[in-house]
Image (cartoon, rainbow, N blue to C red):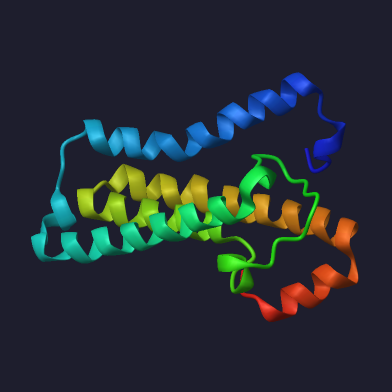
Length: 152
């Protein structure tokens, strides 16, 4: 499935629904399951929520600066290098990971943290690699220069 251009419109639509649901699932499980706030250490809840809040801010900032270029599957018309993209190539994935970690840790969700490690992190790494390939193909040297000035 490395070549997203080869997918049918139905397959692209299905991925556009399934991928966001993969991010929502651990939050839903954490919400409906018993809570062990801070894994029995209530003093860790606030720092975990701060991490989650910072992640949410990065995530939203990435979405705002992408604007109409925001999509579940890779592909871009312009190279975004302003705002949070001046520092990070994948602020949405970083934000998703920080948000999920913070919220799942604050709730004390073992399932959620295991899911985050086993599903979400590999999914985001895969998606980032696919995006980087697509952007390298499209923007060539300009993208290479951009990667040298930014972090993940």
